[in-house]
Length: 262
Image (cartoon, rainbow, N blue to C red; front, side, top):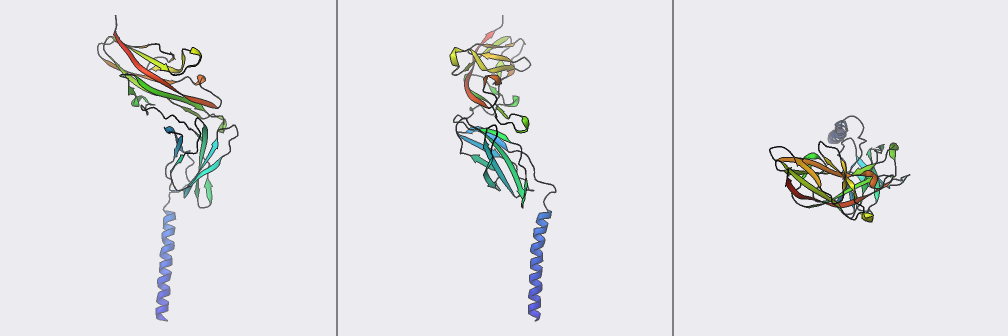
């Protein structure tokens, strides 16, 4: 009888420890509900693939990622459910737009869905100068560069606002003292012999102007020392399909010449 009683006490202690560990584990979670943040989306990084990611949330047990085609009335369906914090969507069609939203769960409770984000599948990847979306990432212009630019907006309007996906390309050019750099931008495959590109040129500190195809853009240095100038090439949104559409264009950028000022 004594041995039986000791075994019972030991079993009771083991069960108590086990339950206590579980309780401590649950109590160790931060207070509050899981985040409702939308996932980050990466398009044009891999051919015909859209990559989604989100931070790990210790207040959640798993994540449910839903996808919908970009339509006026999108219908979302789950494409992933589990503990991972990223998902590569390979079931995509070239130049198609997709919407994604994320739900987090804890036990039987669901939190979300998040706001929707848009991704675009493409057989053309972003150019090799990316990322140069910010001034601090500017690509030096020293020869001819081949690049691309895109602008898309959603047909769906969650919360009454169209989702947008737009690229900007920053560059820098070094101009010697009392010289002028002549920069030429050429958009490929302009229809109907048009010379008006789908791009703006913005020299930092000046007003943006629409780029004329193959026409030199002057960047002038009146100072007595060599200077680096920052400029940006970005879409003329109205030239791309709006209200549910968009496209990707390719262009070349060249430092055509540097000439002395009179």
